[in-house]
Length: 469
Image 1 (cartoon, one colour):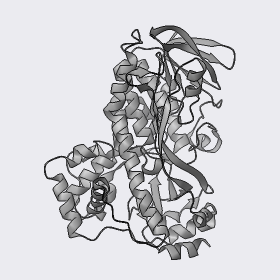
Image 2: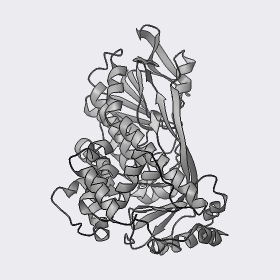
Image 3: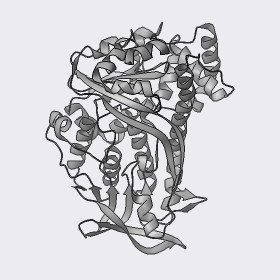
Image 4: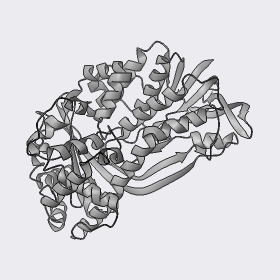
């Protein structure tokens, strides 16, 4: 009998498995995609197919807090990231020249991270680290098609005691962890055994992502990694082995901007933005990959203290996911995995108590950062809609929106405000915690009021449409 089964071998699933193993739990990881671990970063990039991961060819970023989690909890993964070519960078170092008076200070190492930008290379590092862990057995090409139930631990609530595989094999375990991502089939499998299917609550506020990768000398940052530019946003990320990615976001129903899927149009749009034009000067190594993501979802696994089932818990995107617009997905999954494993790894013999411990762990960091991430999308959406009509940023009576806009502008003018923003952006602390510190809110509002709202230069909406026609 396995002590635990983890469904899904993405970064969150493998992190969960390694954390459980570190707590003395034997773990079997079940991954539906059949391809084995590639032997190099380039073979991972060129040949690895992960059909279950929709964003496998989009850019990815490990926030500084995600890097801290690896250094503190999973140092083998951080070592493997370096081995596959991840580059170390620091937020203050990258943007120091853009903020008057911003210089590196003791303590700014909290803004360090490792970046690879290419998802297959990130997954290679996690897979290698998991493979080297003695009590983690990863089985690829294995599909879970049903759940096994046992005697109930809570009256009226089904208890999951294992899984049935598409091979006909049955695996039993003290705990099943669903880390199979936003497309998880586990809610349906729970319904099949008479459990309450976790209800989904979502917010439709998303974007179409159009990404192209390049190789050459890494471009210099003259603007933010993620720059709002009227009706579009642009994301620029450096990566492993002299690669980088450029992503153009636009509203899913913005028909003129769909033309950026054409590589020539894509580069024309980037070059129309003075602080970003040099990001397409390298050698293109892909065409433009497009993906639409519109929903921000949470699944209510525990309702009024009653779980959908015992013996099983979700982590990461299987519990809740957001649009990848600000690069928090992997870090959010790692934080959730750490908190959940810490809460339940020593109580696998208490299935009735695990759901409560899971809920408390989820509300510790994952839920607040999920909600804060959704708030960013809800703020940006009306701005994009107004820009599409050639209108200025619409005023808002919502204090969350007002403060968010003030912070995003003031960080470009003041080093102290920049560090407060960096804490929030890198997920080191909840926005309410940072802005609630003595004097922080006052300084943000003072700097914002004393300066013009920051806006990176770029074409008008009419000029943008002309460039894609």
